[in-house]
Length: 83
Image (cartoon, rainbow, N blue to C red; front, side, top):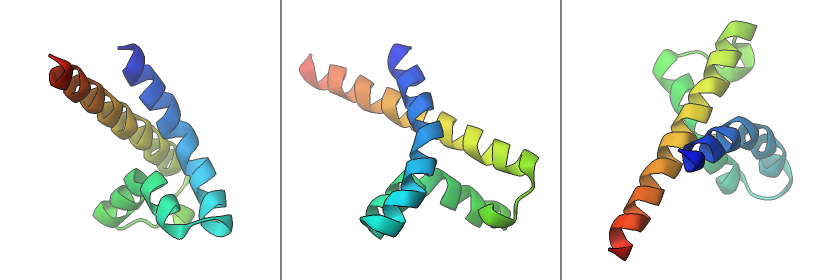
């Protein structure tokens, strides 16, 4: 459960860092960090920059949940591999 909380926190912070990293360092890394937002934008047809405040909040919460799930699955696979 602790790892999922870290994943949720990462999911909230990564989009913010992803925007700056994409402009300064690597667009590929930024796309990885922003993947949940880009995915949700594609599915809903709403561009993140044109979303209302509530929609942006939903996008960021979706990103947090997505990263938490990813962290949880990777930690379970790691534990499964060590057995």
